[in-house]
Image 1 (cartoon, rainbow, N blue to C red):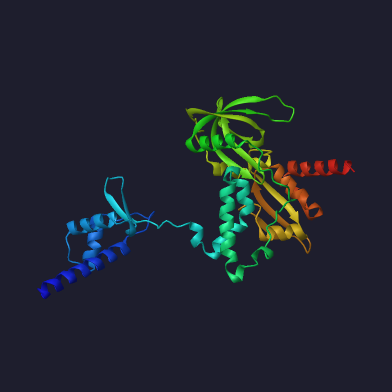
Image 2 (cartoon, rainbow, N blue to C red):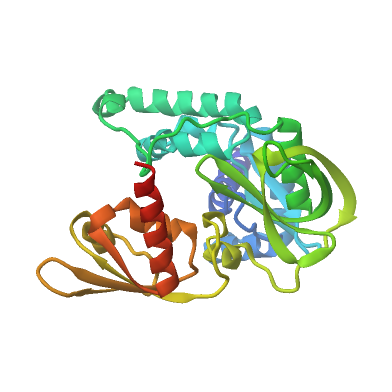
Length: 345
């Protein structure tokens, strides 16, 4: 009788070890799970002499045991795949210091991108991130050590420039690719215009949010619609008519929010010195930027881009440290604005 009990105990311990090994070898969701046959092969490779049916019974038993955190789903072919679930745990409870620090530093950007309805959730995330940092002695005084500033004059962001009901409809229509109708006011004293739109995407630039869409009557011509000029929005339960060739990435490459002057690439040549030179040495105005020294003072910077008011503004920003050499039309735009500015004084 003792020998029988010893054998049962060995089998029991063997089953426990086998199940522990099996759980430990399973991938963690959302990684692709393993089929029962794949699990059986792994066990067989490790020297576990069991049948496929035994593996099936073990998995079903562990699945019924809640503490095992085991789950499954069927793939596209209807084959069941097994994986481990995360334990119910708040992500920020296990957030490493570096990630907590990054989240806190991203606060200004997040406030501009997220709908204000997520404000409470954002506050909760930031509070947990702050607590994560403050609980570590090395980072306890982090708020006194770092400041995030804008490259431009720091304007005060208006979080309530569009009704949240309308923002939600716009987001839903963009994601579900359904048409929407809007009433739009181009200027403060302009009459309201009504449009049926095919929403294609969103662009967020500083405090301005843009809907990229085509009008129903011109489905091949993407346009920008500023959120704060949208007076009302209604979802239309119709599929959009997308342009034959459109990607948001290619559209943004033309810098449409920078007030496009010409929808054609041009080669720009500038002469730069001092502060402007320091900027283009450590940053690029375009992927193909070329920088060459002219003399002890001036350097030449050449690149291709779509001409925009942004480019003219960048040139004017540095005053005497930038000269536009070509193209002539951009050079004339710069000169005209300088003369107009001088005439104001």
